[in-house]
Each structure stands twice: as C-alpha cells, then as structure tokens.
Length: 301
Image (cartoon, rainbow, N blue to C red; front, side, top):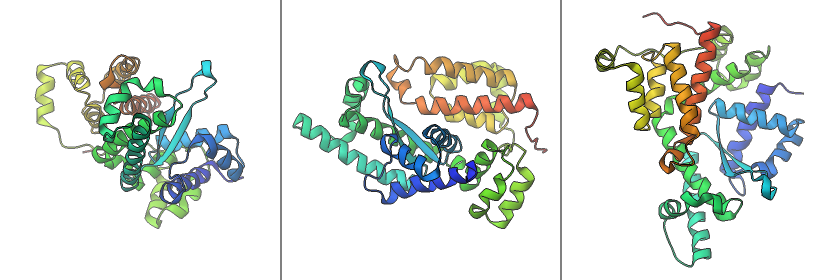
C-alpha cells in the first residue's frame, strides 16, 4: 500500500482535476469518499484524515455544505476545493449562477447571489440539507476562501504547502522520497535537511509603530483591539514575524479564539470569519506545541 503522503498528494491532484474537468466540478463526501476509499485501498475514515491533513497544509479547502442533524438522521456533507485562486474564481462564478437560478425557480423573482446570501444566510439552518442551503453555503464560503487566498497568498505557495505536508507526516521515514516527483533537485535536498525541523516565517525588520504601541499599551490590549476589528490575518502576521512571540501571548490568542468560536451563533458577522478563526487557532496551537517541544528553528539576525 502506498505511503500516506503519496496518497495525500494524489488525492490533492484528484480534487484539482475534478474542480477543473469533473461533471459537477465540486466533489463531495456524499459520493467521493467511497470512490477514493476504493481507489486508494483505504477506509473512508482514513481518507477523511488525509483530507484534513491536506486542509491543514493548505492544499485544499473543505466546506460544510450540509450540517449534521441527528434528529433528522442527517450525517452532514462536505465539499472539497483546490486552494488555487483561479480555480476558486471559476467555481465561485458557477456557484453564484446556480444559486440565482435556484432562488428564481423557488421564489419566482430574480436577485443577485450577494442579495440572496445576505437575505438567507442568517436563516441558513432552515435550509439545511436542501439544494438551496447547499448552494448558499458554497457561495458564502467560496467568497471567504477567495479573500483568504488574496490576503494570505504567501501561505498557499507550492513550497509552503510542501513544507507543511512534510511536517504533518514527519514521522514517515520515506516522506521526502514520496514527494520527490513533486519537487525539483534543490527542493529535494532542502527537504532532506529540514525534514525534522520547523521553519519559521522570516522575521521582518522591527516595526517601530509596533514598538511604540507596546511601550504605551499592553500586548493583550493591542491584540484585543485587532480581535474587535476582526483582523485575524494581522494577528497571524504578528506571530509569524516574531512580534508576538511569548508563549503566554500566543496562548491568550488561542484561548480568545476558542471563546469567539462559541459565539458565532449569536454574532452573524463573526460567523463569516469562522474559517479564519479556526485556522488561526490551529496555527497558535501548533506554534505552542513546537515551542514546548523546543523544536522551532531560530533565525539569527
């Protein structure tokens, strides 16, 4: 049986091919989990784990288009998308067209996809497990993921994704060998040297505005200002560039995110940032794990 990292890379390619050439363009767990499980000789649970590792490594996005509902025996349904801006833009246009047609056929009036999501997304639970509900979830999250790819594109480069996937499967002895077909000679050599190391984002020159701000206010206060403005990308950048580096501060960010995630049901605007919050919380947890294990590679300046 092929190693997990090889299966993961082939699965990422399969999703990309579906997004580009498939009949419905967007594969979902309803049918494709069984297909992939058979193709790779893995259980559906294993395939789910590999899909989550691809999500963590930014190869794909996963959208919950149907929420699980035990009372109605609804198990939930996921959609899988390649994390590529041009592909997402094409899928977004197609999804918006589909949503507008579904809305018109059921309400006998025309509205833009933006107007439809603004009207119906706050009531999305009422449309769960319906074609309209799936379509609304898809359009809303495609918009969010397109924004993420535009604002944090440095985390979606081929090299960044490969490094992350290697780290996920760092315990697999043949990880670098399995990635060889996807790397050039220089990258393969670098991968062999770095397979057991965590690479930090390059530290930027000291931002004097940040220094002045921390002299006047506490770090916790400044971070809470960013939270109130929903600037999750700014907080992540502060951690990546070393401006926010104390364990207690990163722990505070993680704990605050956990609280905020529990409030998305009451705050409609916050709900739109749910994917950002989850991504940042997981990043903080990974960072804390690395700090506690003392395996972060330091960069001297």
